[in-house]
Image (cartoon, rainbow, N blue to C red; front, side, top):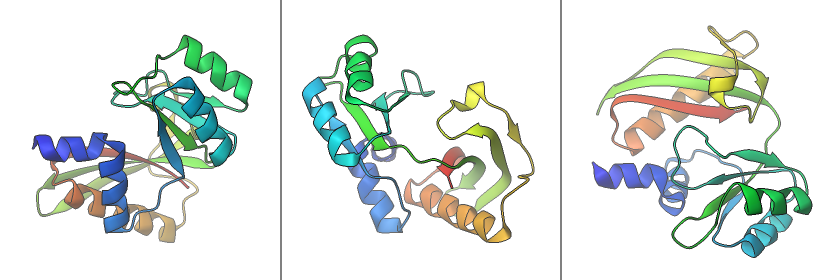
Length: 167
């Protein structure tokens, strides 16, 4: 439904869902101006991942390590405003894991867990993933499967869902 789509795309609604279903996420904030983005990044701590809200495919996403890099990003890549907020999230070092699932609204089946070769933060379209994962422990895969099922059910998914995690 449109409500479920908005829950997936609206930062505050998605954060509330993650809290409700007990799925962790990195510290992050929304900025509607360059100054607010700087304040958010300073309070979160560098490095941060910045990207426009409501964008598909990771366009204009960047990892920034300083105020100067963030100012360049805000001046060149996006024009933040109340209608076009920018997301500022703590950058997590680690492995990026991609999970594909399909749901009929009740049952969630996970046919694949893929492990990205590149560091977290490289767009999945620009990276290589291996299947099955080569370095994940069974406990990690079980946790990822559990989180995927919670998300699919929490978003009332009927059809395909693709989720990227960092561990």
